[in-house]
Image (cartoon, rainbow, N blue to C red; front, side):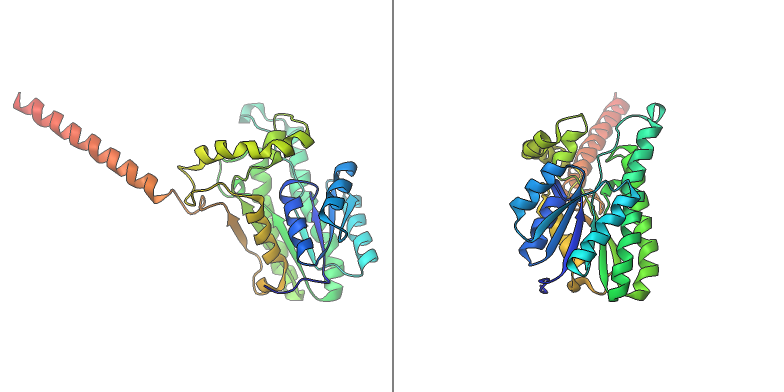
Amino acid sequence: MSDLAGTVTIVTGGTSGLGAETAALFARRGVTVVIAGRRQEEGERTAARLGPSVHFHRTDVARETQVRELVESTHDRFGRLDCLVNNAGGGGTPGPVGELDLDAFAETLAVHVLGMAAGIKYAAAPMLAQGSGSIVNVASVGGSVAGWTPMDYSVAKAGVLQLTRCAAVELGERGIRVNSVSPGPIPTGIQLKLPGTDPALAERAAASLVPLFAAGLRPWQAIPRVGDPADVAATIAWLGGPDSSFVTGQDIAVDGGIRAGRPASVSVADYAALTTLTDQLAEHVVGSERA
């Protein structure tokens, strides 16, 4: 694994969950990290917990001017920008089509798509000046497969996938790579925030979701364990560093195999049940004909 010491990374949505885990991993590898988020106190506590190389900058990614300030202040302070992790976002708004809250839908798009677009727009300038850089957008398995996440979230993450490809084919010619990571269901506070749980309490209670996820994912996920934020962070760190220098415009699913298809054992069990039913029906037909 290549040395990342001396590089600078911004992680939006870095105050909790996947973002905080990613920031921690970068920091352990010698990276100067700026975490961005809307919650000032939580952000400062997280930065202090992660160590002296981690700094907090209050940012609402739905506001373009704040994204520009985040990038410019980071570059002014540290003299470079090597990686941007576009991770900020919420869980969307559950509900059927007939009850769509279009204002909430627009807000979800503003954060996940426009916020990431703003990050790419402003991060590109210092990276182009350097002639190098990596941008990693956090998408979701819900952006590729319907039914896993609320509609507005799924649509937004599908937009992130195409945004990634469009940016990659333009910026790749000038030394900047752009990729995305699509996590599957990972227990973090974001799931508990959906019904309105206090964000701080949601983060502390995230571990309680593991048994629920383990039971629910068994028919869908080939790898028989629940995913962890560290799994996603490791993939982001790989994409953010030089070990992935020939990779751009790609989406990597960190989902235990959900997008690949149903686990073989589940299909075998279904086939066995179908065979049993077919045999029973055949016996019934034969019995009826003999009668």
